[in-house]
Length: 331
Image (cartoon, rainbow, N blue to C red):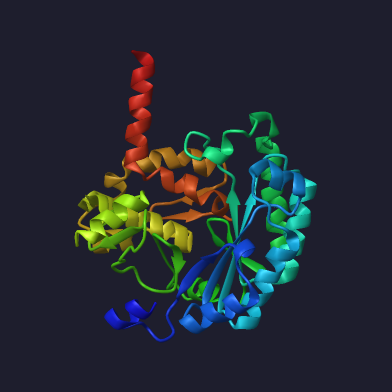
């Protein structure tokens, strides 16, 4: 933080966020982090049930987690976001409801519901998990609907992408005023801008380009010692990428997309340019997820729970991958 302050002019009331492992933080450390300049804490929570914790090999006691939230509040953090996972192996609706209730009682500013992703080929810790221990789709949906009902009753507003915040939270106010943004780090009250990624695997953005740092610590430091930027890979966004990104951001932030607003910024005729996507969205309309007319796309309250799926319709790369898979199946 000292090096950053010496090289950059930081916004006085900016958002300075840090992810915290509640198992490794003490009360004095929270105070120290606040004094360093951090004002937003993200605290991950799996499930308070011991069997679930043993299955995912992450022992994190209820007392440790709740104390971390309380210490961050006492230290004066502006925003405290709890990332709560549902759909974990050995997790039941009852176990999830207990954990959710304890988190709500702790009163964090934001609660982000994350659907557990089982990717044993990517995460070694998941390779010992039995598929039969994973909750089925109906149980996951029950957990999600339960969380929505409980959070709404507790006074949280659904911003989108399963992120809930108290009604006086800056994100809720920004969304109400039409100035909410969505970028690499999720929702923000600050306009999209260049991002410098520090640390292994970090993803940054400069203008129309995206870049990712090396994911291996030794390679990362080797590049730095040679005075070379530790970039592993990068891409330059095309005009089409930028158009599609603006469409997705509008849906994610505001749940409504005006064709005219896109045509104002980009030299396209929306209904012609996105003819394929609009045809595909007819199925979503029949399912009650969106409303379509001649001028705009409106995401319904039910559709807001499935925003990522709606946005996938506008992802040409996913479409191309699916077409390749379909073609290979026919060979």
